[in-house]
Length: 540
Image 1 (cartoon, helix red, strand yellow):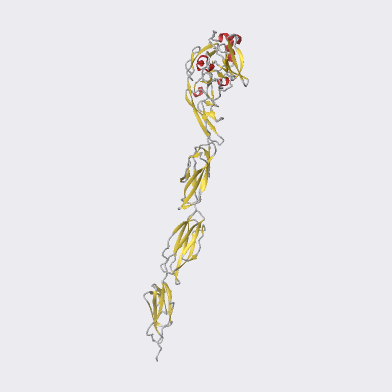
Image 2 (spheres, rainbow, N blue to C red):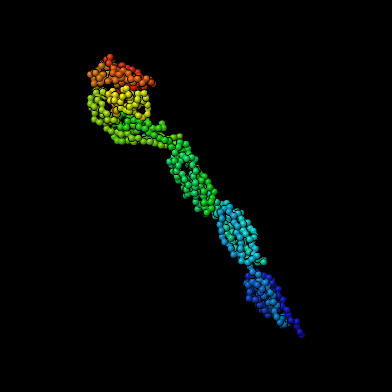
């Protein structure tokens, strides 16, 4: 019996991708299978003498072979195995996989490269959270997207790219794109309003961690100073309003996080002007502890407040303040609630030793005056000579300057007949009877009742003129040195004079008393206040 020689069958893929496992099968039911693969493949399963199949892992590209032989049931074997040529194709590999970062709303344009020409690419895109948008799955040699980060945290999009060549997929590679958020800026407080010379304190914050801030500053006009560009987490600048109107400084703040410029925002500081406050010394710069309270004035604008040692309800009390050089402050707040102040000094001294009928030294200018005791009153027995000489053609004004006229506008005459004063100037523009007025500290302008007491020492005013004149016997020594009437004329020179009383006579006049050469009496004269007469001072 002659048996036919067997021809082993062999089935399996003849075109494969490298690093793929493929199953090859032969005729079943035979014995002594002999499987052989070329050096580019490895049998990983089957392939034994009793196996009708073999699983081959192809690890080398190119033409590889797999063969099989066996014994047939007749005991015959083929003279040669059956051989199959297998084309093992390569898998492409991405060569430029890398991570990168962009700012929100930035574009990506990522070319993909592989080690083998002709490779094609496809990818899937995976976001780190729903806060990032603009990604898509796709295919092609370049990944292009516009990615937006809607939140405040750093987000990513992972592009997983698969390379393919001739039906063989290579290993995937990830391109991870970091998408930085848009930094914002918020202000605490969101704007400020304060007075000129104050310092801003605006804290800058962002919902994006690590944000830094820089700003530019724009003033409303050239009247505001102290602003400037800067950086940091706090806008702290001392702003000064040089004018009289409300000014502003607008800060344009730009946030930057992760190298990305965020959304700018503006905050405005309003600078209210401070009032211009002046304080002119409208009172004696030197006084004594026994002086009357001094009504404070001279502060501008009006309706401010005075403060300092010895100050109470707008008056300075020398005895309360005590000896020393005291500062008095005038403070004023404007309609914006902004305050300013000015300060002057007043020196309080102990009164110099004095006995009536002796000489009085005026601590304000060191002039000396004779005094006379008449009854229970101590009088200065000379006309007051205190203040600054002005022409008699000018009115004496409430200007914080003590003003006087000298007879016939000759300054030398003030040394003889004293100064001539309009009543309001003499009274320091106070209508209070018995006020110190321009008299030395501790003395005052006599009231009508006090004049009448003096006259009563000589029976009455009808007889008091003769003893009170310079030619009389009282020591009061009235000099008949004339007057200055409101028509700017000097009158009664050498034969008459008027002396002021601190008692007013209606809104336009005040009492005065006249003496002359011809009569032994003292007259009662309701004089217009803008007439100018000498004054005799009476001790408090």
